[in-house]
Length: 338
Image 1: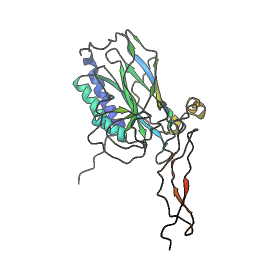
Image 2: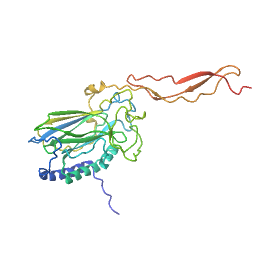
Image 3: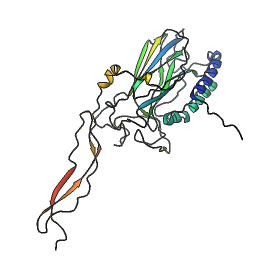
Image 4: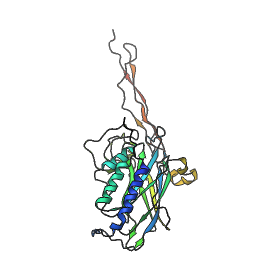
């Protein structure tokens, strides 16, 4: 009987790719540089810290907010530093199999193989980075990474948990400005749909999108289905669900940040959530359609009363519109009187 094969872990995949990237570095200098983008001429390598801050709170996103099984949280962050001719993912383009698996399940093995292939084929990827998951909708994770002139771009993804195939991330932010490195970059992040699962809500069961759609940004009005967890028709724009801060730092010995097990330690203390508490997205009450009118109750020859009802689908929150009446009556005349 054959021994069972052990599935490579996320950390194993990262270590494997790191070895490959280090092996490719001597050849990077000979690669042609694209001429259709601004050229980075910084002579020194640069080191950055990355701080991802989740802002997925019940006050900011009250509709169907996941409170258990599982509660709102963030997956590991997976990212790469690269040249301008590489894209980990792109809005309005189709997700690769690796992006699909990460967006739907948080599995990174396939996307690591895709990064490895890009490194072997066009040597466009320089390094990889990861940060530990956040056990909660609000909290933060940190990583450090290195960039240089030929590979001055950063891309990353973080999955929303639970969700069908939703994620936040950055597609190719350039940290170089001519002959110098940017000191600090802060970006607000909004949710994206990977286009591979057609679920409308955070806890929707798997429902494969056939044919596959392109990656699209989720807004307060798109998708326009009222059941969508991010559908807030009163808002022009969704509030940011996360942000990332990239800060230039002095060189350290740690360039690659391997993932840790998610713990409570990377939850933000209550005192650091003042900014999030200022965001209170109004959620209007939603009710079902009226039921059919009930039987007419009354004495023969006299007018009677009949009722119809409806029920609350979504209770209001954060000063949203109150629920209308759930019971209605009208006069009627009994039928079938003898």
